[in-house]
Length: 332
Image (cartoon, rainbow, N blue to C red; front, side):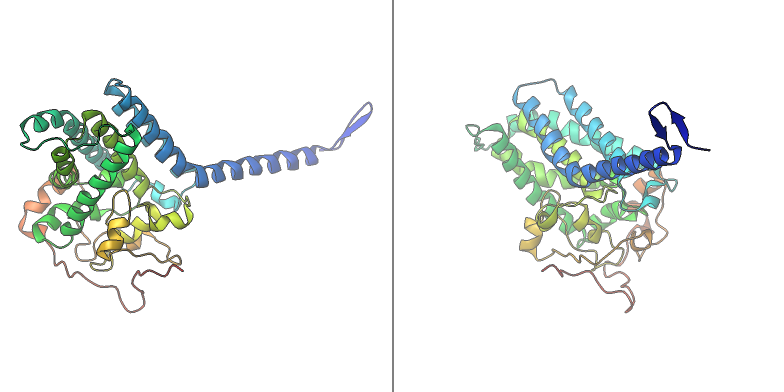
């Protein structure tokens, strides 16, 4: 290939190719940086903000499903653009199972919104809900109250044998990606959500606030388990996102008993269960349960496993060898 000559100018095809490649690399870097620093604001402020706006203006509840579907699509797209680990984007015969978990558990979450008026009608307590406050403030109050209840049930699920049987399903993952957040035994999902929602019902939460909260829960579960290499800086010690939650999925009992929060890590700081090591990197070898490395992988088998004799395991677990340092807080 030679240099093309035209009247008044000379075109070097190699230079054109280099320019095209350079421009392509620049665009790729720009997109990756947009995901790295813009993905969290888009999901937390964009999706959740739109949920709050629609709920406050009495929109049809069908928007719940639409917004959650958009959030799932954005999560999957971000995982392809900026993965924490590229191998975690490859299914391990788990795509169908995880989809089943997601559909069942999201249906439970959305159904709970419909049940709230019925429960509110029979509660013997007066309404203490601050309905005079702006809708966004009401939603933030709901997030903090639900976060406390869910975090506490989650912590108890690592300490109480029968709760751990149900919760173990969630810890059987072999890769860390968005749908992991919805990979839960439906009974444990119900118990955990009850811990977050019942205090709100007692307080008299309006259905509209509960509807927006259900979207926030779905978005948070996606963010918390996303295979996306995003960064939030110092907020990682406050917000319960994937940088901290990976430590919770370390497979050794005791060492993985950290960072239980759903929305925030506030309660983990109070419970003294917060942990973070900025030097730590994760792989599939770190995930799962060391005490039960061959946990069933099929959806129906996972539903049945907690009720089988072998379904429990020693909560003391199997600790890692001396060559592997336990996770601890090394932030400065």
